[in-house]
Length: 111
Image (cartoon, rainbow, N blue to C red; front, side, top):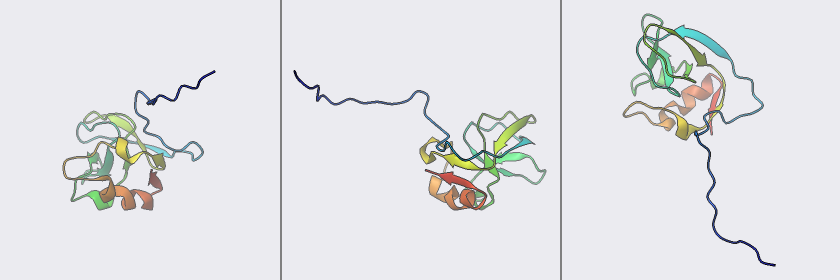
């Protein structure tokens, strides 16, 4: 009787975005000002439409997109919950550390 001690690599496809299982996720519906990829942190622009967070707007995060947003169409925005930081779709120059505290302030926690 022997044991298989060979290294095994396990993963998930697709990658998980939602990390928590017990916290209810609050949602809202907003119009997107531009095309925005799924899992992006978003803010509201001057017209009240969703825009991808940039380095300059990282402090004013509104929520996270569960799915890709199409310009001038309504989309769902997550306003609370737990998410994996490495699954965020961030714009160039923005890191998960830049949005971690602003997200935490609105009830979104990164793992």
